Length: 399
Image (tube, rainbow, N blue to C red; front, top):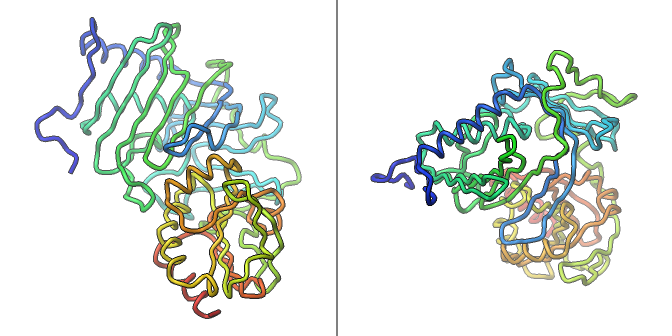
């Protein structure tokens, strides 16, 4: 147990010249300002890393229209995300009742009303001001074991929250203690927020977990020019796209590649050292190709089984290749392979192999090939022991 028996569960770090009460008063002031934000439009620059790496796996920008939505009892906000500020291409939306995902390759709009996959929270990444508001509110009100530091950085204040509970804490609106999963090794959760002194509002937030690190920086902000009453997400639906329901385990139309019984598409891809590896040169009786993604929790959960699987068979009988489709960066793949102590080869994907294997860059996927490289089984997703058995049975049948 990580609960401390003697120390107070809520501890502010006191910097020279500042009393603890002043810290609380300032954070309450920031919280009050955040609660006055009825809407915000801004550009969000997003980054993510794997622990131990200094090179981001992903960097991308989105233009966001965020609305305070008190009728939504979950995160308490609605928002639409666009690829650019002209808002001609929406890529995600949440209106308080459902979320919408756009799949351009299929010309499909997938609507999720949260009935297909019941969870104790809605799996929606909150928009920036709602997100930072709930982090600060939690820091001021929680009885969890936390440490809070507030530092004067000249033009800004730097806020750091360390949550030392038995499980990781994520914010989907309010704080949720997440169930333990196979892909994190340390439950400590760290949240950092940078706050402008000029308006006492956040402009950057960083989240650090044992399995992933992410950050958002907000620019070109316009406050309270939009009204939730005018928000209709269907206004942004691409024309001539079909509307599909969300189906858990099959989120995307035609999401399971129809390649069983076909010759596996040929490829030559580089490993983490830049050396080419070709499918044609792999000669084992059974080959497992795992399409994976750095930052994918289910992919990380599968790694212990895959490492064990690689050691069960001779190289003549069985081989295992992972194809990394998310980061496309050799440095990130090297760090990932070293961190996970992989005993199998991981290759860097290209657009053609993603297209040929029809994964849509989703992960994980498992393709099981026979000695003639005929695809005998395709598995999407990872369900721990159930998927382990499914993969093992397919391999055993072919040997």
